[in-house]
Length: 159
Image (cartoon, rainbow, N blue to C red):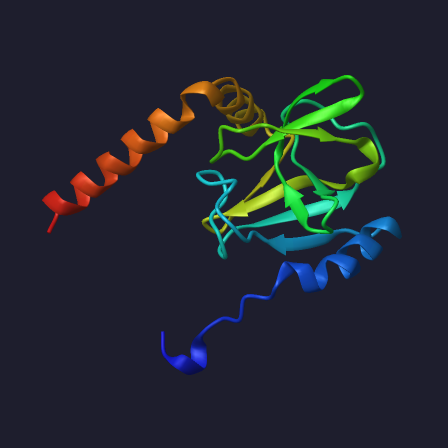
């Protein structure tokens, strides 16, 4: 890829008012993922999600798009609902963010595109992954370190 072909990665902070407005007015948006909090499911700058307005209550293991108090938009998985608020966590994280209130949720991921393949969030295989990965949260740090070590070793042997 030469300099003329480099993709420009927009600052999501700049676009969040537009995204919020589109969703508030009943539209849907496709967003390219920024950051690594949802890895290994979603890869930074490559994969995308289709977000629709949050017109219903969200459920455990779904991926709502919510707005933090600082205005930033975040797409994390619902771990559980307690005391009228949601506990959220990215797939590449072990620390749970709580409380996130229903008023902060502006949309819900209904499908994602990964490695060029689009998958609906209602897909049974995806839902199984979401449930299993969520339940494995206490072991993620160890599993991710092991995974990275295996990948690095594999690359070293294939040189």
